[in-house]
Image 1 (cartoon, rainbow, N blue to C red):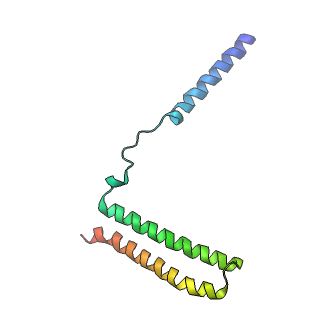
Image 2: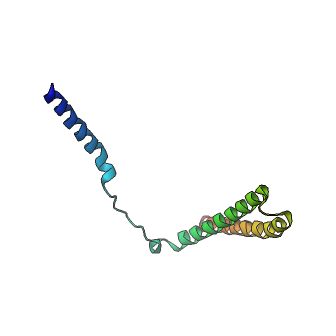
Image 3: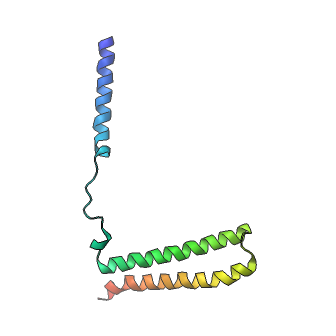
Length: 103
């Protein structure tokens, strides 16, 4: 009976090790440097980050306004410029994505 329990425990440990091995190995990155990116891809990433920052700032402003942390006058003063910035970023990103299709 004891031998069977020891054998079962060893088998369980072996199964856990075999299943866990792929997760314990460090994957070798092919290239994780930003410098290796194509200039068009790098430009698109920068434009996407600009878009994301503008939209996030707009979301935060609207959430603060709804929560009462920003009054109506300050909201009206800030929302226009943030919307313009988000729209410009979206237009620039759309234009950058259309460039390769035109070629």
